[in-house]
Image 1: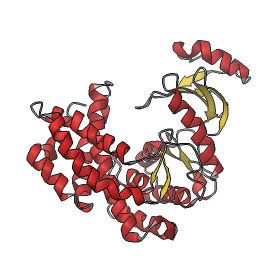
Image 2 (image 1 turned 90 degrees about the vertical axis):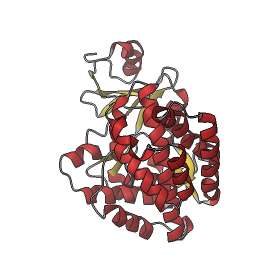
Image 3 (image 1 turned 135 degrees about the horizontal axis):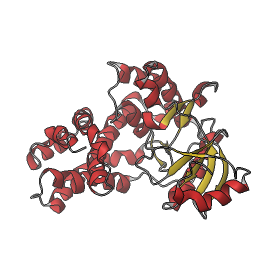
Image 4 (image 1 turned 90 degrees about the horizontal axis):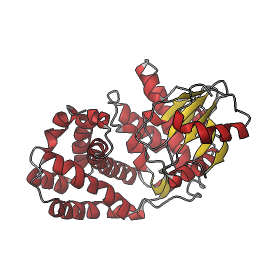
Amino acid sequence: MAGTLPRLEPPAAVFLARHGLSDAGLEPLPSDASPRSYCRVAGEGKLLMEDRTDPVGYGAFIRLARHLNSLGLSAPRIYGSDPAVGLALIEDFGAGTYGRLLAAGHDETTLYELAIDALSRLHSHPDACKVMVPSYDLEMLIEEVSRFSHWFVPELDARIDIGEFDAGFTAMWRQALAPLADAPKTLVLRDFHIDNLMLLEGRPGAAACGLLDFQDGVAGAAEYDLASLLQDARRDLALGLEHTMLERYLAAVPASCGTRDEILHRYHLLAAQRHTRLMGQFIRLMRRDGKAGYLSFMPRVSLQMQKALADAGLARIADYLDTKLPGWRDAGRRLATLS
C-alpha cells in the first residue's frame, strides 16, 4: 500500500482488503484541529478516514453524514465503516474547498449564495433535528465562553484571579444567552466555514455545497452556523456581502424560524458568543495542543468580537472586559506574533 502512513498499516490493510482495495495506494492528506486523519484512496473517489481516539466523534460523523444526505444536502457518502478500529471509507469530494477556490479567484458571491442556500434548506427542513445529537443548551454555551476566562485571560495577565473573573463574566453571559432557550431549534453543524465547505460541480441546488467536519453537530439556534459563515475567523468578506447574504437567508427561511428582528438579534448574539469562545480556543490549541497556527486569526477575531458585542447590545460585557482586562481589545495583534 504505497503512501500508507505506518500507524495506519495494520488496521487499514484488513479494512481495505474487506472492501476490495488491498492493492490501493494511500495519499495522506493534511490534518486540521480535529483528531481525525484522512488518506486519499488512489483512483477510487474515496477517502480512508481514521479516528481511533474519539469513538463518540467517529460515530457522530457516520450518523450525521447519513442524516444530512437524507435531507437532500451533500455530506460524504459512507461506503463502509468499522467502529472497532475507527476506520471508515467515505466519499472523496476532491480538493475544491471554498478556501482554495476563493484564493484562486472564484466568484465570492456565488459561493456564499450556495452556502446560504444550503443553510436555508437545513433550517427549513422539518426533519433537521430528527437525529441523535446533544442539545446546544445554556450550559454548553457558557462552558464555551468560559474558555476565554481560562485560556485567553491568563495569557494576557497571569496575575488575574481566574475564578473571580470567570464568575462575573459567565454570570453576564448567562443572562444574555438565556432567551436562546425559546429559539426555534435545528441541527447546528458548528463549523460551517470556508475550510469545511466544498463546491461539487454537477449537483443541483443546495446539494452543490459539500459539507465537511460536522461531527460536533448539536440541536440549537440556527443562527450560530449563519454567524460561522458570515463572520469567519479566516477571512474578511467583501464590503456589503454579509448584509446581502443575511437578506438572502431572511427571504428564504419560513416564518417558523422567527421574525426578522429575532433572527438578527440571535445572529449577533451567537456571533459574539462564538468569537469569545475562539479567543480562548485558539490559545488552548497553542498551549495544550501545540497548534499555534490559529493565532494568526486572532486580530480579526478580536475585532469581530468587539463589533458583535456592540451589535448584540452586550455593552455590560464589553465594559466588564475593559475594566477587568485592560488591553484586551489590542491583544490579538500581539498574540498573532506567536503563531
